[in-house]
Amino acid sequence: MITSRQLDAMSEQSIETLEKEELVDISTINIRKDLTHENKILDFLGQIRNPYCFRCGDVPVRVCFSKSGTNLETALQELFIRTRQS
Image 1: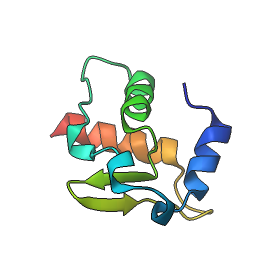
Image 2: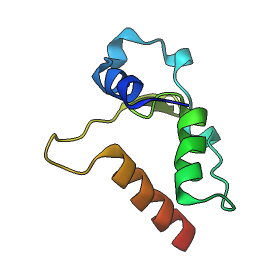
Image 3: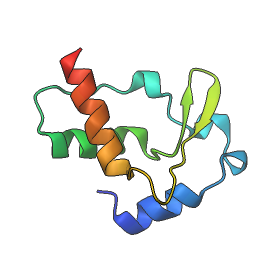
Image 4: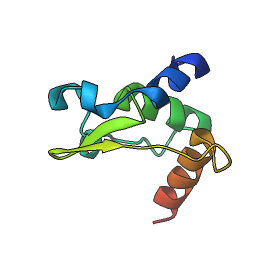
C-alpha cells in the first residue's frame, strides 16, 4: 500500500529522470467496478505505481495539482464516479 509520504515523493518526481519503459501505460489499467470507492483507488494506485507520472501510449504524462486545488484522492474519486456513470 502506498503511504501519503510516498505519494508526496512521487508528486515531486521529475518525469525527465524516468525512462519511458518505467512508466505504466494508463490504457492497460483496469478498474474493477465491483470494488468500493476506497478499494478502487487503492487498486488503481497499485496498478499505476506512480499516479503523477505514467504513459498514455508512447506519450509520457506528468500530472500536477495546485496547492489550493483539488487533492489527488478527491480527483480520483470524481474520476471513478464519472467512469461508473458512463
